[in-house]
Image (cartoon, rainbow, N blue to C red; front, side, top):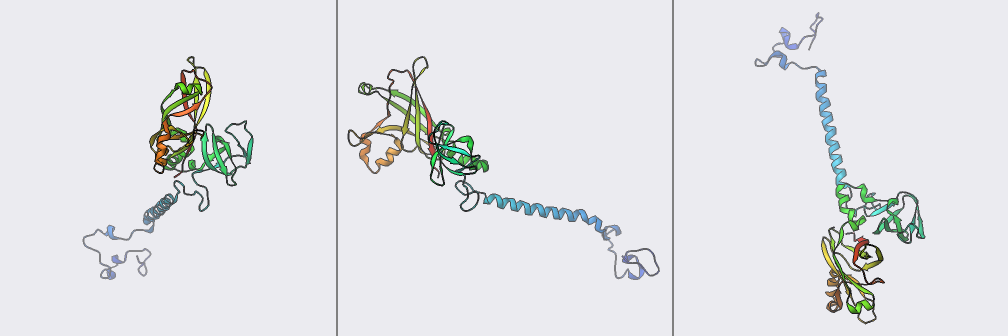
Length: 298
């Protein structure tokens, strides 16, 4: 736009007769369509472009962040940081010798102290400090690091903290042979079913013995050696020692098969069922429950 000499108004250069040849008006476009628009009309366009750019940059940053989030055993806080398989105390608490609030104290733990998960029993975790102290802490006194991850991480790591939720005792039954009755021995037979992606080990079962009225007569802990395979099942049996007086081992059939690959003669000393010495001989009911268990991290 220009202001001709002596004029008070601004006009388009193409509207001045002397300049029409320099700034011709296209014949196929209406005059209002080709005229430059004011800067104010461009503000919404500029703002839209800027906002779009910001959103694109933010989206890329978020995508990069998610690709860098740790999974599984990776650390949360960089090299040497916490991992999803560790726990952090939420308050100053006691590490106990046994999974019982009345048990003696092994170590006094500070708030925010890092612990390595060892096993779970009832409402306690067996844990180890960085200094090597090992004992039991109440589950509500710690926060498992995997809970800070996303849904996929929580699903992946949950069996490490709640292994008893993923192993079932199936087809439990018992028997007493005449020669075993004299020694107060009952043979329990059952199958262990593992629905998780982790191998399980360090299993301790609790046999609750009842009479025909449902009264509890006795409770016996049964320690099982060996591994329960991932997403699979295994029987449990008794492996006799090489010598008559050697202690017997309660062992999963899965682990027996692995050991027998090295020493096939082990199969000859293995029998189905777990031999348990009890004081109660005449009973009508026995419940087998998981008392303690540990998932093996990958």
